[in-house]
Figure (cartoon, rainbow over the protein chains, first blue to last red):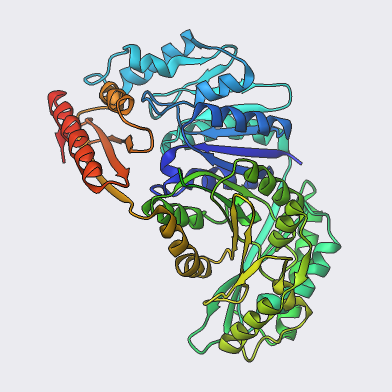
Length: 267
Length: 267
């Protein structure tokens, strides 16, 4: 399994002020590319907490630990300190990162920003790590390669995070997943409940490898004439395209047959 | 500090299929009631993973651990098994929970569901725990009181989770936070950047207790004539209403003065 963990940093994600769309966006891209997100953690801008969670994550040896948020110039941007602490790496002013900041400022902010002490904070990165140009905003992303896990620190601003992830991380991921195929469909049905479909789901899940399929029912409440509504998601995935499709077709047929047998209607 | 942890369970949250609006909704209610969410974790429907995270969470001794998802009747609903395993509590068929299921079914599902073996799975709860009627759907919520932490398992369907949280958990939380006050405002400004405001933010944060204020700048890109846009959030909180308001007014004045001094414009 090509495993990923996400760590999202920011008080605004814990106070309910902000919906964590970053986690959803990154997870979707990883899933589509054939990777598997096994855990997402969200914590405050707190150096000790960040350091602890990075350390814990590394013991689980994911291929990638993707961190978002906390790279900016203000007092509550503490991600790199936390990552540095967890790995015993000091933060040093990195010349490449300074150049990247200069480039960012020359692009957007001629009238507002000069590269003073406060802004240079964004170029202080763990010694031995690699800065990556932010093509949209200012703070560079930072890549730290450990023995088993690549740690990438991305800005929390969605447009910046998405740009760097798409340009610099996703191609790397795709190199590793190689030829990956996924076939998915979603049915909306009425007059059949989750509990009624549970036996066939159990049967299908038991006879397939856990990472080759994903089957899920999503209760959607009731129609106006009090019939239960249900979403049914069928996913087949793997490296062999014809196997993926055959498996998808078999499962899909079994499900449709059972839904009709139970008196359900597919919308 | 009245600390909360959230644990959201479900593959659909890790595949990017579903945005985690539950976490945002619960966090907001807790914050408004005077509590503080210190960590949110999202994992798959995997008994060992769930058990491990519950165990880890209890070592941090939050007042509440709020778990959502994985209470339904299908093969991938494993939350109660995970919670039971982490605490060494067996799952037993609970008579009160069976009654609750009967009530739910008699309400909504007369034509579709009978209380068979598969549905009774939702009434198998850790021995010694307390089931709570689901007023909207079927699966009861489950409360487990440990020495330092109350663990509440809520359904993952948003309407069900919100109903049980509002009726049964929020009043309990408010009993503990008692007289809690919060004053908040959000400014939208132009022509001042995050980095320009960093020094005054540092100064204010250093001279106040960490849990009494929250100050944050949110970069919003640029106006059409290339001026930087910024959101500024000012929060004052605490148990003494007049102190909360005085602190808010002081901070707000200092911020506005500094923004204007720097040539910024408040929208």
